[in-house]
Length: 188
Ligand SMILES: Nc1ncnc2c1ncn2[C@@H]1O[C@H](COP(=O)(O)OP(=O)(O)OP(=O)(O)O)[C@@H](O)[C@H]1O
Ligand SMILES: Cc1cn([C@H]2C[C@H](O)[C@@H](COP(=O)(O)O)O2)c(=O)[nH]c1=O
Image 1: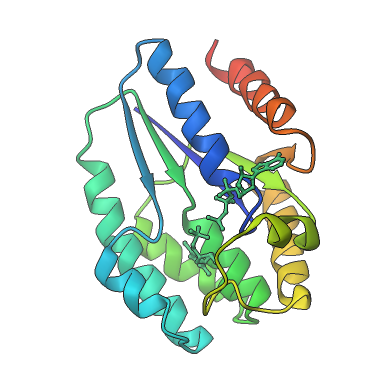
Image 2 (image 1 turned 60 degrees about the horizontal axis):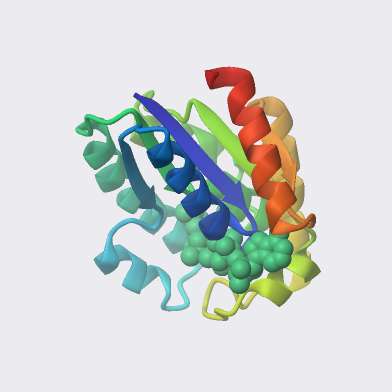
């Protein structure tokens, strides 16, 4: 089983591209479990109620702990997830200012070695990404400076953890083609 994750800013195209990717894998007759974080409806409701950054950190960790248990029990060729552990590092760590190593340590404890095999990071400037994003709630309604920090965080993480960085400002068709090209360097 391979665990593949799509990461990026709100509006970078994760949901659209990850669903196209799932259709691609299914067309090759692979079995796929498609998922996203936040995972639980109950915790997501709390997350979207204007919490402090510290509270958000622990809500996302609790949500992830439940999510990872579900993922460990899958019996499929691929798990494809819209967001993961790295969103917490980028948003609550780099964006929210909580110590990065502390956020990584807490996440490592929660995921207990169940780490993504491949991460596609859809890189996009905050102004373009947010102009595409329709939702504006407690999390999305932060300023551009916050999202610049989150983007810088993702760029650092991409180097550290060998993400595939995809230019998400390109056309949707090219973004998807580039995802498949990267996928083929590993799996075909
Ligand atoms: N490369 C692209 N070029 C133009 N529009 C795009 C591109 N990728 C996605 N979009 C459009 O941008 C909007 C947001 O895309 P999507 O919901 O997939 O982003 P997301 O990263 O999942 O956002 P969120 O994190 O807010 O859920 C959608 O209307 C989608 O069709
Ligand atoms: C997993 C995770 C998510 N977030 C933020 C990022 C987004 O603003 C929302 C999730 O909603 P979307 O449908 O993916 O846009 O939550 C975060 O701050 N930390 C996390 O760990």
